[in-house]
Image (cartoon, helix red, strand yellow):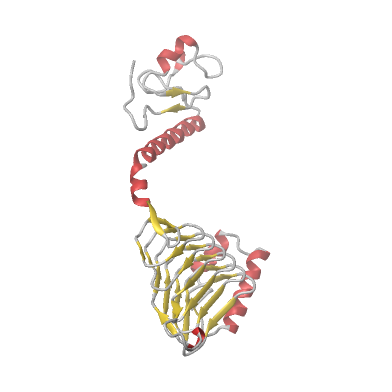
Length: 283
């Protein structure tokens, strides 16, 4: 793995990443690589303080993607099997991941404080020997990309969490949770569908996009020194037809300059003739 690449140097320049904050993290990463040579790092990793890293050679394998962030007191334990962390995954403070078989966390997932993830349970069938001596039952865990696990979430063995899922605080995630859903509770159940909500707000987003474009056009006219007060036909008012004073129309002007627009602002800003959720009624 090469760290001194052209892309990495461009990132350092673009983010001015030579402050004491970044220099300290470069040092931590260098020490980490010396201490944990068996841990696979696919790029630079931001490391907090008091980390616990367990990956016994020949037993457990730990793979960290590019630009992973490990918060203070995070514990990654690959006792056995493989623990894979995708690119740009963010662990907050005091997160624990215990792997005995196979755990995979997708890219750009956010994991909040005090979250616990594991892929095993203790066997409890036999009443004779102590539970600690009865062995483990294991099932792989999959957490998709772009998920958010809120504070104090627990993910149990066999969990299959789809892409873009949000798990509410203090929830216990088990089994299959569909992609782009919001789940909460013990056990976590789907309480909202992110796709339906996104589609329902399509009209609102279109309105806001049109409003933003109008703002950009107005700003461009101001920079160019052109008139910005809308005329009756939708174009700017020029010459003698422009309202006098500080840009606000007089009572006689307003009926003309606001025709075709839903509102008028004294500073020359106007809003496109768009109404969300209903047809615009004209007098």
